[in-house]
Length: 448
Ligand code: ZN
Image: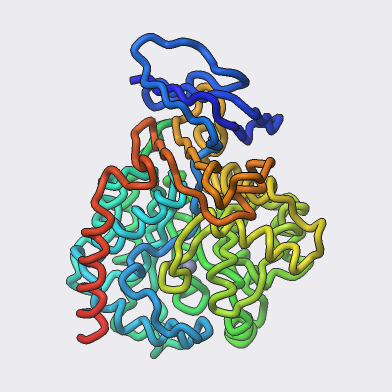
């Protein structure tokens, strides 16, 4: 099937950063067949979309999420991270396959509505007897139709051993490693157009032992999958690392083998100058989550400095319980605003923020060959934004309209060539039915 988008502005995010005021994008099957200026080629039997007044961009990439948290949004609304976590751990201990599948479906539908075509998810809560919740998240991604990087998370450092989570929601280290290996064998797809890939993701320095960090890194490298964890999110975490390990969070994880271009860290709010330099030299990646960091009062990550040092920076919405809107476009908007609030007007351009939401995310997930830009031969992950409504009409620069204006309606979202959103409605699942079921599940969880 061939789809031709015609008469739209196009921001390609290709190597030359080509942009077209009135251009086209042609999708053939799951690949981009043509992109450029003017109306493009005439293709027999193609579906032609008159995209006048719209902007075509690469589908956005979300590099950090905890979809299961969709059912526990809006709680502890004024708490900092450690208090927020200790409030929510007891609720998360009650999740099961059905709840996780519902949460992930609703969360992914919301992401799709924000122009996101590829998402990572970091799932680290596996209560005993809860069933295969990892498979339940992946099943939701397949149903909604997003490209998905499922991070097999873990916690093995309970409160009695000096960690933050209660003992009954941490797992045994050997069981974690065996489950991680099974997850890779069952789900990790190395093909160019893979819809599911797996990464290993012990949760954080205060919920995981050093042994698990080291052994997870060894396992990931032997299986050629990527590594992900939370790092340097709050000053409380920094204090924890100083007291327990006598060093800063990055020193600690690097001593356990966590360094290099196959690692992406979530947050990185409190990296000092030395850490920024080291991360740049190692070509490591950071999932910048400005909304969650602001919601929990953690601070503002040094995204511009990290990029300048040579690190990869993608954007993440983070778990829905600390980022209720869960919109990648909103993260891009907050990224540019917060960078300037922190570093002055020249700290970041709107195009750099869009780059983090597209190519930056693709690089963090190791997918720069396949996604993140509109180029011939790449996968057909395309967002088409309406900029002709009263909220954007009169803004000449479409990137300024997208990044600085209110979130525009999404005329179309293609993922792997499949229509996931059309005319601002998710076409693969019923968002309203999921919303109603979410409300019921939330009330039950909170009351139990
Ligand atoms: Zn997180």
